[in-house]
Amino acid sequence: MSVRLPGERLRICLVANCRFPISEPFTGGLESMTWHLASELVRRGHEVAVFAAPGSDPGLGVTELAVDVMPERPGRHDVGAPPYVEVAEHHAYLSLMLQLSGHEGVEFDVLHNNSLHYLPVAMARSLPMPVLTTLHTPPLWWLESAVQMDGGSSSFAAVSRHTAAAWAPITESTVVLNGVDVDQWPAGPGGPSAVWSGRIVEEKAPHHAVLAARRAGIPIVLAGPTLDRDYFRESVEPLLGPGATYAGHLPQSELAALVGQAGVVVVTPAWDEPYGLVAAEALSCGTPVAAYARGGLPEVLTTDTGRLADAGDVDGLARAIGEALELDRARCRGHAVAELSLGRMVDRYEDLYHQLLDRRLAA
Image (tube, rainbow, N blue to C red):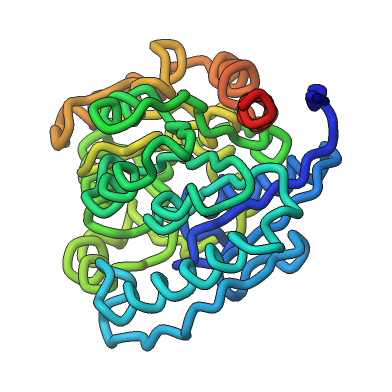
């Protein structure tokens, strides 16, 4: 019985989140991570089929999931998932999984489920190839239920030790830290301002970043998509003005330049962030980080690369900003290159793919 060798070309089915397209400017860390994972796997010579939302980057050779166009409601955008969204997503993934359970599935060596949906997990046992699911969130009841239904057919990776620990009562997982392309997030010169980037929603609390920067006496620039327009209008927009500006939703190259020209990046989760990709991106640019100590963020930072404050403590975050400004930018960049790179992440996923194939061949 033949066993695949490391470095051998694999046929990988990569299932993405169908809510947002896998294209620039990225809506969030999940979309960015999926795009970079697919691109690096292709660069390494693997054959990758990406199943993703309509509007995803055609350069990835995407097969668009059949998701109905969602009506947009005035004032709000993607806050929660109303029933019509849930039904559309369910049908899209059900159609895909039925398709892959037939003759089309035998074309692939492994399926990497990088979505947040329950059906690729619940239906894993019906597929002809092994399934690896990356856990990008804390346990959610619908995904927990799918894991229990799965009956051990899937394997799991978690984006941080924090996320793995949260899922430990439900399933075992291998920790694979998200990685950044350190070439696309180059070292920058730094500067006098702070930067906050990410989805502008209440759970990311960018208004805390503005308040903390103001107390630290440093100007701040916000960047990212305004997915919760009510929150932006009520909690963020009133704080904008001298010393606090909103740059919009930027392409990655423009965001990397902005981060590289900042003296500090501020990260303010109001929930247990599963990883904290914006912190890794900042360090790749040589920019130190001031953040709330929630979720996986303490795993991204070291005492040489950032300062942490208690969750919700704006005064403590202001002090962390002042201290982070004094940190050495070269050490920040060096930590990202050594520990948080895209190459390191994809190395680990390639190892997992081969382990799954070896296990299948030995069964």
